[in-house]
Image 1: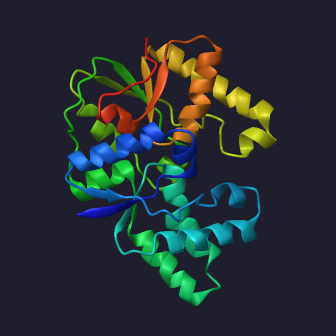
Image 2: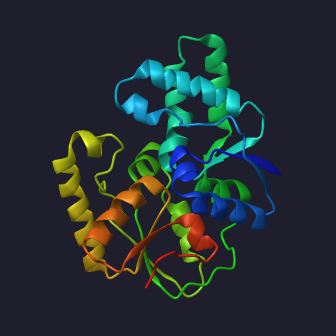
Length: 242
């Protein structure tokens, strides 16, 4: 089986190690992965800022980049939700493009969703004697309804203990954290307090945006707790853990 990896702009630009881990997991599952070179931002930040014209232009760019009929795997709940639900809305007045958007939505899966629900696999041979806290990100949980799949994958890691953290927003929300920094900081502090009280050693998630927000707060507080994308944990790698 061959799939297209829509890496997301944050993974491509800031967290390439996450993209490498995603490819490694898919390879272990017997999947051939390729990276369509024309991809860029999915357009969600522009849409959240109210710039529908810019978001629509990025949606059309993504349709071109992912024009092959292969399944698309996305290591981000927010970007997968954008493609699956927002593209058909953005392109509703363009009948030809709307059909393409709907077909793309039907073959687009978030990473954990694809592994558990489509490939029916959960074990990848990782062993981590750690207490791992799973942070359910907003778009993944509320936008896609994906919750059990990441937990199923984490629970298959040998020697690990898993705790599901609160589903409250971490305060990132893309441009929300820029436009309303005071509220964002308060939301982050509540998240950090729950992490501290839980005693977890690693915070796992499926969106690097949320993990970036949380780890920034942990580091500023001098906490030894680190964050890792689900894919990194499935291949047994947690960078920076003391």
